[in-house]
Amino acid sequence: MVAGGIGGANTTFIQTAPSGSCMRTSLANAAIVVVLALFGGALFAMTLEDYGLAGVLFLSASIVIYYRENRLVPD
Image (cartoon, rainbow, N blue to C red; front, side, top):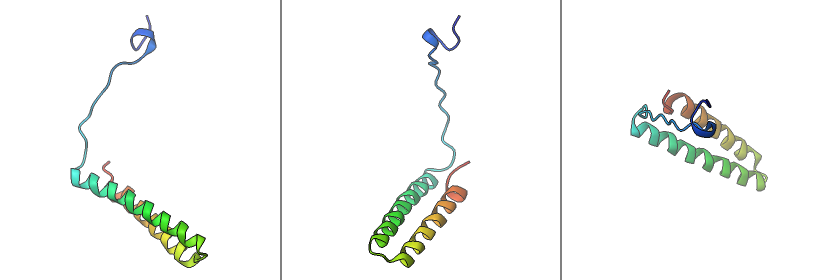
């Protein structure tokens, strides 16, 4: 007998309730948009050869990523 159903395909799906509030998830998603904007701005600054601004934007993006992963994403 094949484990997992016919032809070996596992057809069992487990749905769990989302942890965290909707507001927290919205803020986490908004942080992604901010990070993308910061990366885009940094890349644009690099094309203009403004490396100081690009560095500050990349640093800001990394701080937003750190904040998102430690504070906004539910465990």
